[in-house]
Image (cartoon, rainbow over all chains, first blue to last red; front, top):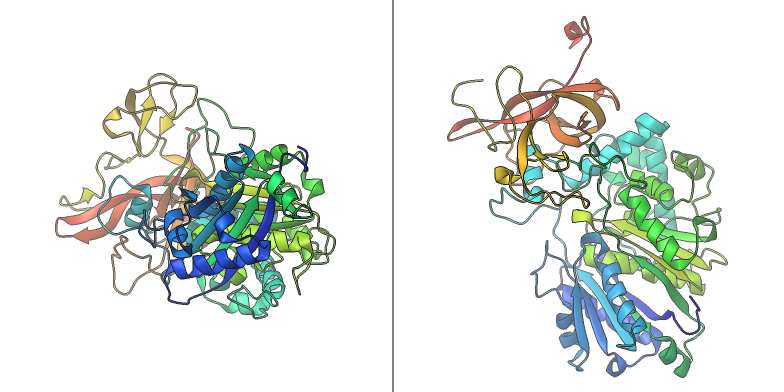
Length: 399
Length: 153
């Protein structure tokens, strides 16, 4: 794919700081949108597509939408779209914008994700819903999100010899990365001892191994190659791939919020796990491979999950992520820095904004603007996340 | 278990001495599903199969532990705590010979120290909580101990 004629340029990015601000999600979204437009130097009146990230848990489906942000920015007659893909919402929204630009149907797209979250465990919507796996997992099993994360963490211990101290080290690293990030909610150094002495939520994961939920917003302005040329935006960051693939049957890894996996008995195991296939599709679309990646922003819903993602992205072999971590290779200055933003460990999750926040961070990294957390010379970055109901995404950006 | 006990959900597992999970087997491609397909009518999720008719299949009572954890804090509603104060419980995902992995709570009296990835577990039915109709039962995974080890539990 030629970067001159056929790619989409990230013209601007912006965020509202993550936290518990107790305000309406629209406020955060407009703040991020205006920051992204200012960063791009693109007037709101030039935007001809607004894509909003939706959430169903903590908002009002139908209200958390592109049109809500468009109205708050002032109706300008732009086309509008809304995406829901759980944790991958932001990436799917980005993909909608990108593909309309590539199709020549719009020139300037504004993508916005914003969320306001409640305190504590994420729980399903109220009511008796005996046909909803997300409801049943709580009623029948008491299976919370951290319990799923703990299943993956436990496998790393029993199969690869990981230790709770390794998991804690991921938190220590990410806390250090996030110290200088003005958008991070938690900007405080953490020690291995701090993590290990925090309460165990779901064995082997401690409270500080698990990410919080936050309010926050992120926005991205994408423009066509032609618009970029006309406005001198060609020296920017390009979207090389957006992967939003579904799993491939049989999906045999236990996934939130399911009570079971598919059976492989009649068909045999697939070639790749779901998370591997998310990354594989992104690499294939970009014409790049793991060896080209300089920096990664991955979904560390738990510390141990960051280690899983490193392997799913092919940054190391299966079972070797702890070795990279222990050698300091995933910290800034190492061979392949992971989560230089501080990751979810420092942000907490704001579901419809989070995948876009990853894109914002990579854009700053590739531009050399990630003050206090810069991965020197980074030219290619990858994001990864996975959420409920078979949603997941990976975005590859390059300089 | 008293006679007033009823499964928390109907048609997902049998009760009695040798309980088992009830899945649905596609009559076209033989893929087995759990939870069962309601009414054994639906759409097979194997992309190479257009089967729409299923038959009830009792799943193997024993499998290998894929992973495990516990809940040390009380989960939010719609979870119903069987006791106050809340007592932590363990959870396991067990891989069955039918090629699927099924989550369940771990049998009463067992915790994470009794479990290991790859170890054998067996299906039991125990009381989840009690409501106005009496005890409500659910499937659980019980670690399989070698003869002689049982005395240590």
